[in-house]
Image (cartoon, rainbow, N blue to C red):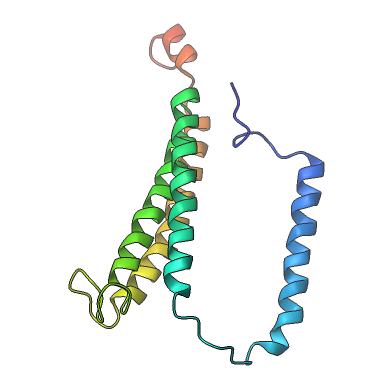
Length: 155
């Protein structure tokens, strides 16, 4: 049984993704001249953003875990783990962020703890996604269970 997450993209899906990418680049090009404009600070922005990321990553983790349970496709379990990592990392970053719970942050946070958690989070998620893709690639290259049992040793 093939999951929609592991199917090959159709031509229509590829074109739609390309158009979406071009629209994002267009919006970026329009926004570049205004990049130096200072906007008013919004105090609760970081907690709102972190809670949104935590919630969406938690939902993605749950859905991928359910899909993995149903299909037993390792790539889905690995992707679920990447999103679980994101949810945990953003939760720790929120706890260490100064001014949210305490003036300096919880967990013995220093002045740069929250920034390093941000780096850890944004470096760890792509690492785990690449690991999931590598897992998928390696398992597609491995001999199938039927072939191994039919030959006895995977001939």
